[in-house]
Length: 276
Image (cartoon, rainbow, N blue to C red; front, top):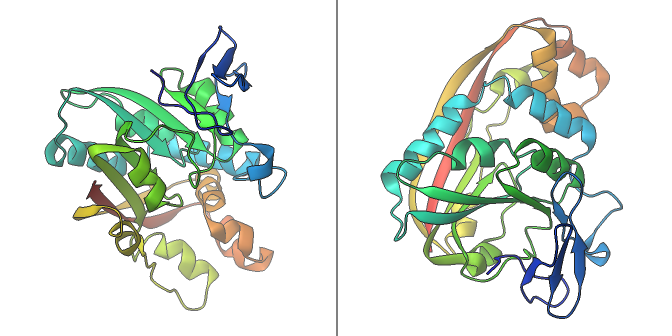
């Protein structure tokens, strides 16, 4: 049985052939050549091309694949291995807001003693296209996390990294005793970059725990902090393009960063674990 549901009638969708998924009410969804499904109805789009654009996806892909965030990946996997307990060794995991698929591939695969079937979804077609083309063992689809085309109680582990969260939807799709891991910026995240742009740096704040506690038990918060040394203008620019700073700051301010060839930057994350 598929965990995927029709975005129109909410019934299960299953492979009808090698190129199509279909529900019992004959709504059909073609598999793109990269291997993903588009399960975002036109009437659910708030813009013609929602989510991150191709430039943002490319910048994030280029930066993450250099391995700078590997300590975060290691910390997530350690928490799953040491703090989470599943009834079965075969689990279903969902990367909600998966972007280009880096976190679902690196953090949810090869977990000690577990066999993970991985799904990833994002509202950006560009992101999902890249994820499906690059990480073929996982299954990616386009949708909104506010209306997930996923059967209720079908997901053992939800991962959300720097993405919007929808606690009621997470609770609906989470299996009994299922978990959600939410990663958000901690107070000092990328402070050195912010200091080059703004006259006064405001610490990051998060409302993750308050939002999720309405539907889940908060198990723990783990702080993950480390420093990365960027040694080239290209790496600096790739990181900058991953952030809101690049898209919301004037050229003159951005030049404080783009004119540099190296910079040490603090990476600061909150990893919150929740249980249904």
